[in-house]
Image 1 (cartoon, rainbow, N blue to C red):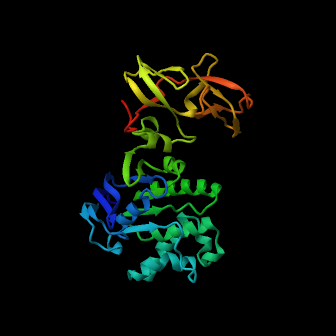
Image 2: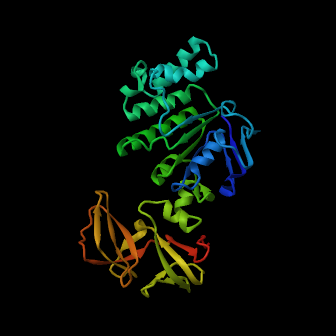
Length: 350
């Protein structure tokens, strides 16, 4: 096990800088998820840690040792890729053993390590099959098994679940988390799926355009997002945002409705509230016209414009709500569940 330090990391391709002074301290045994939209620099950052991309400036340290100039094979890391990267002509056993054979380990030790990893991942019955004879989930387990047998200091996962169907993704992310907790290996996992990030990570690093928007626990990012971007990216369905004017501990929305916040902010700002923090209330200040319903069993999502404006919003009600399209509903906001952001910088206020 080893901690990882990223010290002012930048990456440029010619004159274009794609990662901008990334700082992070990742503790031994911690599971960190790097999350953000496509093109934000997630995989590039992971590949820099792995040694597959050169560092333009800054340092990567693993276990207190700067590894900028070390080859990937010398960094004591193991990487699991999106496309599994299995050798199609080899059996599962041979795929898992390949890296150990290259390192010259005794045959008996290789056999033991492969068998132990196969039992942990519940693929012992498939050791003599070829990858083409396996399902996507089984292939991903083989890819993880190949990483486990190396006993690395660090696991790196590059969107390993994106090729799986929705049900299998849920199952596999739970298994990955349990596996990481069992082995205690420092792990970094890249994904664009915020639900995946929230369920897997001890801490999340949210990237946007090559910048770190926020680095904290899932609850910190959910309850106190540092910016409009983080607030809109973390949480499903996404937070509602309204241009507003603040004064006297309240905000006034575009339709003139006044929502109490208990905050000292004044002037123009962005007001945010999550759909699940809107409470059905016949006297509530927020009124919406329902244009669409999503009955999801446990919750009903209501979609439509804020009354008197064209600004769309979403409200979430528990269970199968007794509401109809075309109806107007009023809502109040749970106490303490409002979010205020600067209108220019879009950074959190307070």
